[in-house]
Image (cartoon, rainbow, N blue to C red):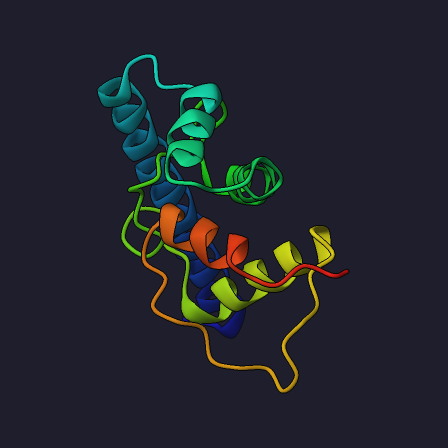
Length: 134
């Protein structure tokens, strides 16, 4: 097999794998949406407010995580960031940084290690507990 044929075969295999992965994600989110029924962003906001999270933090977390959900699927406080949304620790650090920036929170100096953040509620609670600028 020539070099070009091998490269073409690899590209085709990667394309099929990418399509398969995206299709599995779409199907997983569709079944999740069906299981959740009429759960909306307003339901999420009320649930988080019931846990004592501020409205600015709730909106920021919901907006920041929107790209990890299929359109029309609202987050739930118990959604696992790792197993459901596939957010790895480095990506979580990036999300936290963006939330600090969006909410104009002072970054810790020196930066500290994040506590155990497993769920959407854990993330919102961590962000909401941070000291605000005067």
